[in-house]
Length: 302
Image: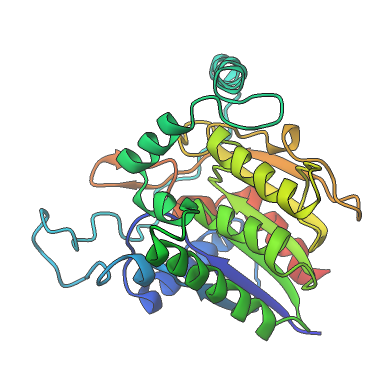
């Protein structure tokens, strides 16, 4: 049985698939080299779906910074490795905000108290999630077709490697897509290691949707748990300053599946910085964190 790494990217338009895959590979290799480890990566296959929602990719040849196709955050190696800080005050603040947000926006059955407000929030901030979460297929058939296309991209790659030992890495919105696929669309493919990075899975509008899908499939019973396809580990990586992954303790939200697989949360330092600005959500920064690399090493060597 061969080992394979399958990756799925997140929000926003992206560079061409080959370039993005190259940058993901470089990010991982940078993390490996930072630890002084000699390691040969198994096959890395990127599930690319940005082209389904965007007319053309970001272009490395675009020099106009005002162009929507300008790449303002390319892969850049980190200058130094930061040690994890305790962030005691920030953790308390995030914990307080989580309790306040959950009590304000979620009912006990995980339905939303203000669904129209959530729709407006998605519309104003996250175009891709707005399309993906659209469930009114009668009035917006195109959005439903796009969601199906996105899911099919991941399913087809998983099917191709169903006889292999799979590590599935999902960044940002990719974690929502992966969770959907593994929980509700193709539960018979075994995933050895499920890796989520900068995941918004704990956001109220995401939890509410997962609960609704669970309820529809489990005959009125809501079950928030690790996808049944995940048979060994679910590791979740979040930077305390990543606003997309504000709820970094997914273990508080999702119960173990029948294999006993429960989320193991890691707080990490995302060192990505470009043009003088930090982006604590960037995939390149997550992929080179020593915490993730150690999990990767264990997967490869076991």
